[in-house]
Image 1: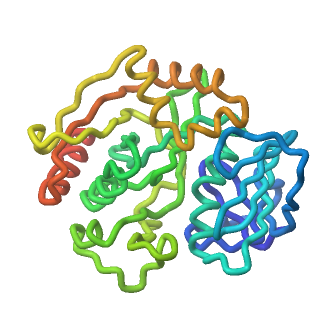
Image 2: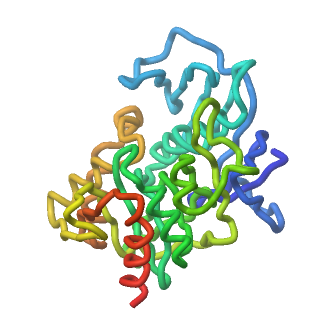
Length: 304
């Protein structure tokens, strides 16, 4: 039995590698974990099939990632992760990859709907912020939490779709990765914070006390857009194919869908999600002096 047990994205994860970014799961271990993470040898073989994605090789039931500076990782059947770390791999960078790209690949293998989005809970409902890298998802999320919201997930959001209930947003890593300047906007320093990865001015900021512990109904997905004229925020409802195409565009590591033959299922799930929740284009000014005001307005408008 792996010594470390965690709960994240609706999955129980048993790991040989300690993941301090996650809160340990308490209580009896009376059920086998959904996912196991083990150290081991991921041998280079020549019988793999090119996956069409950088650093990835596909085999039956498994995908192997050859990650420069990190090591080799095999993800099998959406339930097993084998890690052969490079001798000089930075531990924080290794954990960032495991909790990011590797977890995204594993969730795609399991057929889960994974958005490139951060989310907060306000008055018992989740609001997600989707966008490209650098769109400001994490910064806006952190300001919403500072305004009284609860953290659901940062950067990687798993959404479940069941016929008998609303779409549910599952708790992710109980922390937010923020650049130094974003921390300064929140009045926080980097003292005591662990770097999110080596040689970068981005830090993992724990928010365990402000994070939800159970899935939350997903009420709105905001696709972020920059517009100084929108000032504190302007939401425009997206419908039909426009809503679906935005969800597809903002899928976490969407390139992995082709690796796991998941595109038809994913299209179907995005159509279901677009029909079941509100998808909007949320334009706002990126002026750092306005982010806190925008976050406060979001918190008040959803809580009203």
